[in-house]
Image 1 (cartoon, rainbow, N blue to C red):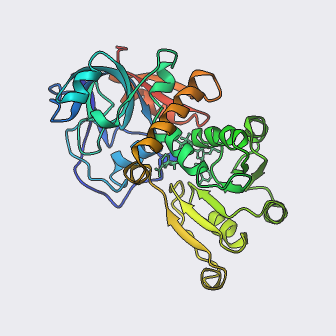
Image 2 (cartoon, rainbow, N blue to C red; image 1 turned 90 degrees about the horizontal axis):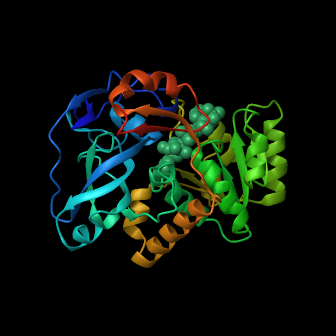
Length: 341
Ligand SMILES: NC(=O)c1ccc[n+]([C@@H]2O[C@H](COP(=O)([O-])OP(=O)(O)OC[C@H]3O[C@@H](n4cnc5c(N)ncnc54)[C@H](OP(=O)(O)O)[C@@H]3O)[C@@H](O)[C@H]2O)c1
């Protein structure tokens, strides 16, 4: 099968933040490898389309917290049909269109075929577009899990809010009576995020950002800061928040280190810093909680309350050459189309 194959093993401490990566050629190459064989409890999926997420761009560089396997297909998330599998659940899924996440040390989604654990794939409703099916797990379930951390009628701050994840969180927050204070770094996405449901949208590069933030924090009193950037601005935002504030780090979109500006606030104001990873949430959430989140995610895509914005489509076999141009557009997701020559 054709695939984009990892060029190196293990980890690397060098690398650039996912949003600054301009070329994947140093890290993956197009090649042909045997179709992977599913193990017990796994399914083999004929992939239709897969996503290029920030986690993929960190992983291929070796700085995602999971070791790479040289020669294995890269790519975490995609959509396709189950064509084979081992075990009871796998047999029931045969012939079904599913969203899937491939394990980081297994055979990935940037390939004509991929393997995934049968227990983790999502059988798709017929009215879900492939574009949404290919991006159904990583960002939507993270949005559902993280917005669910905010108490009803409460407020939260979210950085990098022009991201696909931010665009999912804004309407979900509005629909569930939570108020999102969205931080962006450009003026262009401000109006669209307000339209989607953010209660406030602040440009962190504006000269009066600190004053505007202080005003909104005083009015909304958010206790949660969902942060995908983890840099100097993040540190200022956390410092400006009040008693019991939680800084939840779930991404690292800038190379600059964040600083704890006033450690005394951790001591005397019960402020906390923690991490969020969807994989941990999936492991810790009971089956009914997961099924309910998945049902909600599918119906939001099916009825149009959510949609995946696609900024570029690249054919698998030309992806290494086409990705540099696609990566320059930051207003949506890049989708790899597997069947396209
Ligand atoms: N921990 C988890 O389980 C988990 C799960 C899902 C996603 N994530 C993380 O969530 C984040 C968003 O993912 P996504 O797929 O939604 O991303 P995306 O659609 O590719 O968008 C990335 C966004 O980040 C913004 N950005 C990049 N660098 C920035 C910086 N230095 N300062 C401020 N904003 C910056 C970009 O802003 P512009 O539009 O201005 O360029 C862009 O809007 C990523 O960090 C990803 O790794 C984590």
